[in-house]
Length: 585
Image 1 (tube, rainbow, N blue to C red):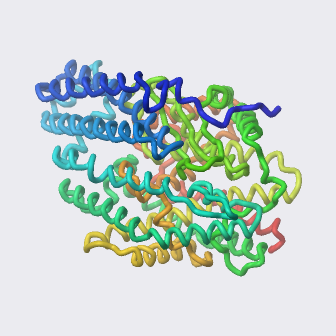
Image 2 (cartoon, rainbow, N blue to C red):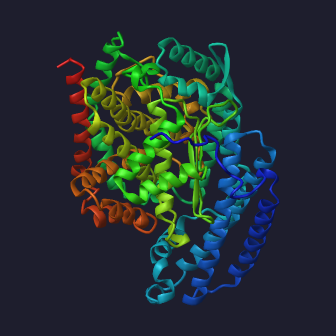
Image 3 (cartoon, rainbow, N blue to C red):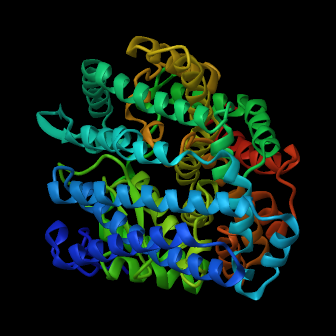
């Protein structure tokens, strides 16, 4: 049954009145006062079990408060990037976050100075039992913490460039078929059924990127340069050290996964070649990649999409089903297709009220359904963490992308099970394989590009023309030469290159994709009841390393290539079946 849901979200239930909200103003003042009070207190604290437990509780309260305000400002800017009040509050929350991180940094240094015997005794105390993991992590990180001076500079330097990128991108307009579109709307046309629309949108964006590449080159150079200088001040040489630490991954785990990605290019290159031939081309043109296999499966209204998601989530488990119903009924989703919105789909968590908000521009396609589901997967992760102590809620991006990809699989696999014709199966296999290609080829290219940019930036400024060359080379390698008309400007419109909170936000997607495959395979084996096991894993995601988490809940060693090959083999089977159904084998 198709339900009618409003495609415009409700933010007033969090702070009424948007950026002019008196409640928001009071919240910001309370947060600022408590940060100042804690900053003074922490300067006097000599960590003992009781004092440390009290400090952690205060930090938890402030962390949740900052996150609530930060998410609200991000949501306001997503729907209206020119909202000056929201821009002000976004800047204020960045300042709060910087001060909060400087307090944490000082605490880490104090923890590092505690003797080993005293440290073990402290961790064994009942006051600190639930904080054990995060305290051990902080003590280890103390030696490479940025200085107070660097943290202060980050607000108006490093993070400011990232925010400027978002604002700049949101202001750009292109004309397609006589209509003025935002970047997000134009990018959505990649999956349009009409080839001429896809091509015109692609060419309009290329023209715009060519016009603006110099400005974007400055942004990327300044971001990367700041990051390298910051790492240098911390004694960090390897640019992957911080991203690996943030994702709680061992280098051995990343290397095992990358090795498997490099081994399995051929089946996905074959899929691309076959799909290109089906389109009448010899090689896959980049603007045809998201083209639909069958136009009959394309059209879908927002209410139909929401009802489908709710139905499939409920079939997986009652908790997930109830969550979806609440999210749509209570106005947690902003999906209306209108100009002026940000180009980037997001999920924002509101830990103070135990809610999330999901933002996108819904294009009325199955691809749009999967984008919506992806963000709802993040929101369900937040939902699962509601009962977890605030200091243990900071899960890494690799686990965030596991939850979002798992949600996609709930929809895709259910659709595959219901498919009755080869045409339907081909359509759904194509949707699955697009995601495999993105995770194994596109994200490998992004990883290569980002690594090479950091290496070249050490030597000096990288002009836009050179960034285009680096992007072209990385895409050729990532796609094993299977792409025609390589999109050399994708370094501009890929927002992950400009994230200041998560450098190298590429390999976490592949990690999450392959881990989600394992989880879904277990779900199919287990049947009813797996939902609670899945939620247990999500709840642990903020208080364990990735290796320990997967060993505890799946009994698998992710430092071993064999683990990653199991997931990869499932995707290879999809490619082989696609080629067979397409009539090329």
